[in-house]
Image 1 (cartoon, helix red, strand yellow):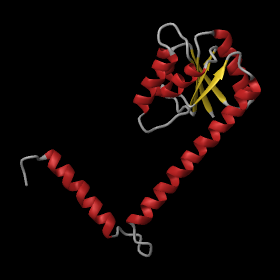
Image 2 (image 1 turned 135 degrees about the vertical axis):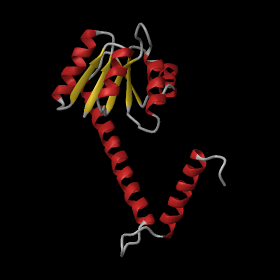
Image 3 (image 1 turned 45 degrees about the vertical axis):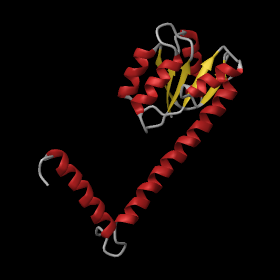
Image 4 (image 1 turned 90 degrees about the vertical axis):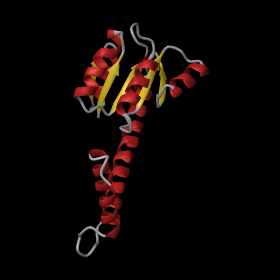
Length: 171
């Protein structure tokens, strides 16, 4: 997995990098929002480990921005923080986080959470492939593999909407 670590403390980034490398995954390190956004725009990231308290932009705000930017493309986000109260955990989940770890980070717990998120990401990929196959089956004749009536109707509807957008005054 390709894991983005967003933390303003170099020692924490280095520790997480070591844990990630030991697990056989690839770390990408960012010391704040700007670096994190650059990495997200250039690399296919599978998991984000997000510090909550950072100077220029906190992890909750950055997570909300990431969720808006990615839309339906879900990437799991695990928050890392020194706070352990229940309200802080609830705020983290409400901000778009998927899990929560308190510092200091336990390497065994982090490794288990990374494996769990990898399984969830794999299930999501499998589900997307199954949906793609299902869509194909509902639009193609199984014998001839040509578009069936449903596929034709949806294609015509899509083309009609496109035509209406391009030429709104034509009927």
